[in-house]
Image (cartoon, rainbow, N blue to C red; front, side):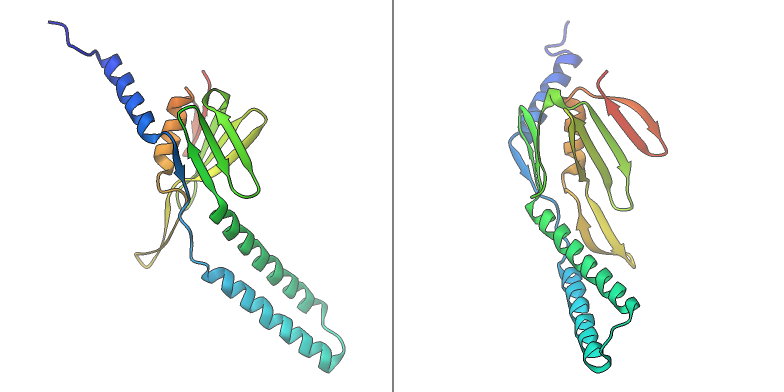
Length: 188
């Protein structure tokens, strides 16, 4: 007796159901505490006051102090920019396309426009580069920051691994190369 549904048809039906479940999703990354950003700005402010006092008392400020102050201002701005981009980041997974927006980047791919996906291991999660049509975007799968066996923060997309799996499956990509935990997928 022949089975009602073959393995191939069952697999295709499962993928279709999975894609429908994942379709029209708007995903946002986990957000880190803004405490680090506040600390960076507070330290920059304290050093700025100290430099103003030095100038008031000595009528000059050492070059090393200016360099340190510049580094602190740069770090504070970089932290603020990173937090702003994280809060603006949206990864949309639709039946016919994949979109990524983060305040500075706006990339839309139809599934057939995705040419390659590169996956790199990170200390916390994986970095996923989606490449196609002369543009690209990058996102991170979920990673947990731990200190003394306690989770201190989460970053990346909580559903990042399932999105990666769907990109590979729906864009019809195959593993082209694997080396040292790095995976490179491309069209056959």
